Length: 318
Image 1 (cartoon, one colour):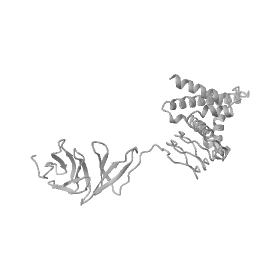
Image 2: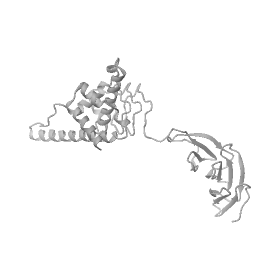
Image 3: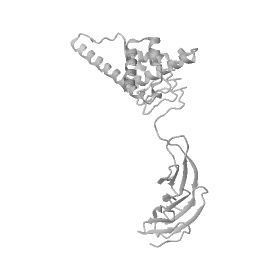
Image 4: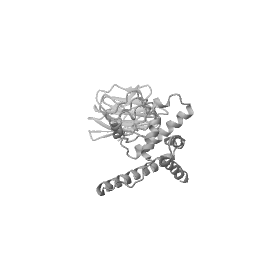
């Protein structure tokens, strides 16, 4: 869009020509990662930085081969200006600043490190040249996905609310870092003590039944927290492993099959068993509830499909 184009041009010109306060004023106007349209701006600026870096490297290589030196005019290094913005955010350099000035600097530093990360900058190489360069930096809300920070000293750094998806941190020192609200872009894992045979979501997606070993775990989604679940209860009483589960249409009951050939119906809230059917001669393997809630159908290794009346537990016609 026109907005993105002009923002990119303003940022890039400031990066090539601006210094000190002027650079901070432009790059610290806002934190780019907080706005829906700004990720495109970040990508465009990162591409420009990558292009000029590639051009300079090519000219340096040709200059070495011809022994003429590089002709690239680099009186102002865009990369060094970005690193300068990051340095300005270090804790010892921001003490005593007004809240407005501090926010301006933190925005500029977060934007700078995000662009460097997207351009493939090797933070570990810079840290090798100057081991304390990134110590105590403050870059909240920065996007450091895939950032290469092997062995970097990040002591006392502020990474609050940063996106750290697939970041390379092997050997990095994170002592005293502020990691509040960090997003590693990974969905939480649910651990169980036994092997999980089957998982079924309730039709509204707010509850889950998990068959693990000889138990059925009932979980519910935590409102407002994407991908997080809490365990509400456990349906026990099975002699053998649970092989399949199904929710009743109204979401109040759970039917399950077991390796001992039984089919059981339990209340999902009280955990009380209402019916236990046993007509399968061998392992019961699968089960389903009819859309009207009146019948339950189960299948087993005895090569039979059994039809049950859900309310009474009596076998229906086959």
